[in-house]
Length: 69
Image (cartoon, rainbow, N blue to C red; front, side, top):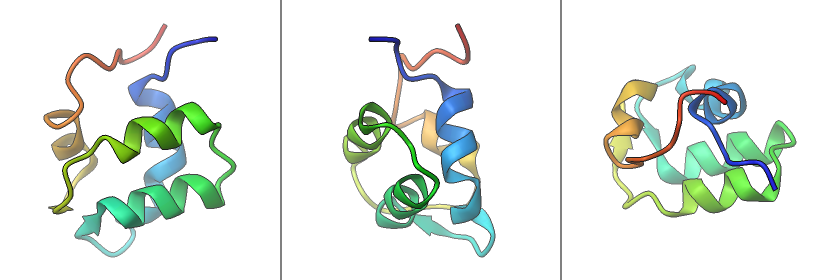
């Protein structure tokens, strides 16, 4: 199984930031709608909740996720 990367998360959650702020639920819904693999959804479910104005804010709540492989 290949690890989830920031690029993959960004690709699957971009639509959630069309009308910021995005909630954790918005990010998960966008990822599901874009066909993200289950591992991406599992990573997003680890987010503590709250809102994000920009994708870069998400990375602070997901330390250790590599940018790319």
